[in-house]
Image 1 (tube, rainbow, N blue to C red):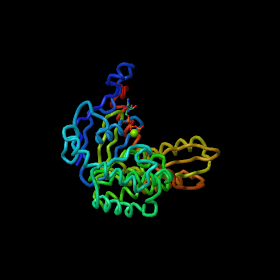
Image 2 (cartoon, rainbow, N blue to C red; image 1 turned 60 degrees about the vertical axis):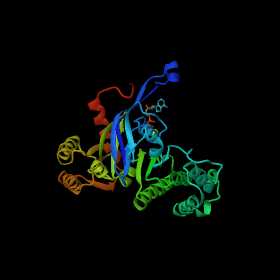
Image 3 (cartoon, protein in one colour; image 1 turned 60 degrees about the horizontal axis):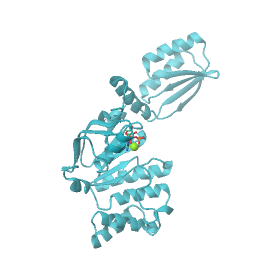
Image 4 (cartoon, rainbow, N blue to C red; image 1 turned 90 degrees about the vertical axis):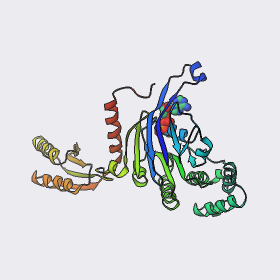
Length: 334
Ligand SMILES: Nc1ncnc2c1ncn2[C@@H]1O[C@H](COP(=O)(O)OP(=O)(O)OP(=O)(O)O)[C@@H](O)[C@H]1O
Ligand SMILES: [Mg+2]
């Protein structure tokens, strides 16, 4: 559906940048990816990784310096108009719709821009208003909508001409938890019911795990890994366990550290105000029971056992760290 081959982008090569001696930044370095029809594909990466640049290249807003990409078989440079007709995009931020226009006027305006007119457009807009839950808000100016509903409208507008592909750059950035969840569910529904191919960039690992079938981790313009989301996050529990036991003498603490290290290498032992806190960033049952029986064997005075934070971020950071170690120092400077 979307094939990206060896795309490279170096910012700072234009005449103005050269004149003011702007530093060259290699935002993308021979990026190759293949996104299949009907899948939700995630672009993950730290700040400055190149995610937005890649999305802008696919939307025709930024020209690559090398490589090529095809969308539904159309080359983004040589068959630009046909390639662009296959996608709708929501860029980062809240400038994707006109604030002074109402919900319906936005849809009509962008529908016309995409070449849709008359009854066909009217029918499409009526369907979209209903599907996206905008029926009672159709006459409301976009400026009056909450940030969550503005984002919903931006997605709705991106789909006005019913393109097979939807590009979303950080779709939940800046949204509160409830709005982010509602946008997430909407994207899932659009992909599942409408068969759309969705390419989204995000920092939220939980969102990626929930929505994406496959993900690529990008850092400093390079693809570090591209894999099945399940495979990437497997082993990463959504939750960790934390056990608190009463203070231990130093030698018992050391013994516990060594023994625990052999049964649960990821466990972290810390001491805190007359107690020992053991965090197990994993919900694999064997590890949990191993930890508990070890605590019993060591005669620990057990205080509590609780569920802790998600460690999905850790998996992501591990991939980035490993990529940087393999790569050595350096980065986006070209
Ligand atoms: N118009 C531009 N001119 C010069 N450099 C740019 C431009 N746009 C982006 N860059 C640089 O290119 C690199 C990649 O930026 P990009 O915005 O694509 O990253 P990103 O992965 O989307 O980051 P974020 O998570 O912060 O949104 C960064 O080093 C950025 O500073
Ligand atoms: Mg970005």
